[in-house]
Length: 119
Image (cartoon, rainbow, N blue to C red; front, side, top):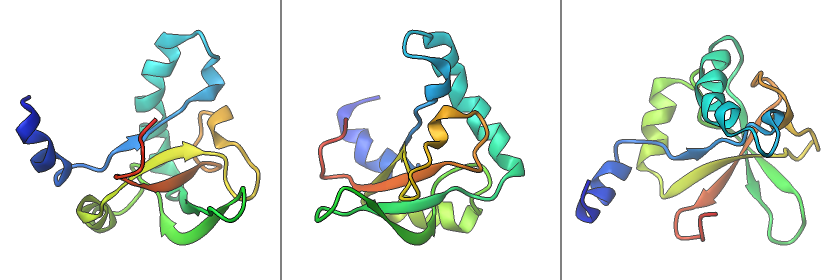
């Protein structure tokens, strides 16, 4: 892929960072496999909620939208592809860390602006 193709590709995908913390820090094979495990497990769960980091506090504020996962509707994924955001699996405003389990019914995704520094 050439650098000039990246903006075109961004209009065709939703970028999401997954963090399967249940794998342990050094288990890279589990972390690599975690992406497809999370994706396929999410078919049987409602879409994970989305929240927006609040600069005024340490908490993320629920947005009433869904985060990206297999159970998120195709129409919502299509809308997300048009937005200048990316999503990161993180601790939710309820304090629950869904990254510690392979199922997705406890996950939250933080919506971040693409111009913000990606980790």
